Length: 348
Image (cartoon, rainbow, N blue to C red; front, side, top):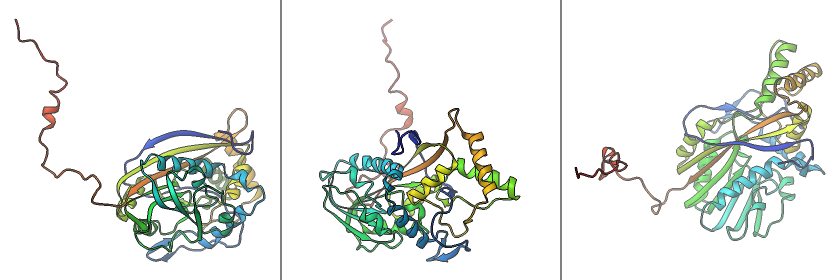
């Protein structure tokens, strides 16, 4: 699939893989973006690590949404939003009231219809993004709200969706618990977030160039949740009937500068407290050369890989199917082996 910058960026789906939960966190997205703020030490907030500067992320998203040509940077969000919407369509029911967390310019709802969602509430930390949302036939209201502090009553929504927003959350376990609370019993949460292997090409190129030119490297890529950790987090938040899978989406660019420019245009620049705000010119030139040498194709394009983690979790309800009690089986696995055996004629 070709993005809005025709001839420069190519978006393609690499693979889809089912994943079993359990593990530890990894790392993911881009270099520093617009807005003030220097490196600071991580500090505690509500018992969780405060990794990201949420005020800076709000400024970055407002800046990106205010760009006159901002739609040319929406290709990844639109693609992932459509895949989240596909998962909504896979559920054979109509949702009277749905919530989109971190909706941005309504990248999910533009792919939904009134037959699936009757009413929709959009929330985002960026007021500019909500102002530039796509109009849909679904009756919609907007609420300016931080994903870490959802201002809704318990048992309010039949469906909660989120696309490419939760990877900037400091307290992801707490946010997942809030999502669980605002869902009605038998409600479903369908989300997508960036995973830890995202932009490994950019990360490796910057680290090698900075080590060679400056004798060491600083973090330029934000830390994110690993896929092996996601199932455990959903389970701890109270969800059941979990599904977690991965899409690797690759975009082709002319060079490293175009990668970094598009990350800014998406509002996906690094906002970690410990980020390094400036890169030396010599280091950037070296990184560009490393990028092309290690990952470039014959036509001069370089790839940027985005690991997208998709999750589905249901709020428990008595009507949901439950596993049988231990010891209630009426046949053994040994009996199953006889089913495929051909019958023999006993006649001589």
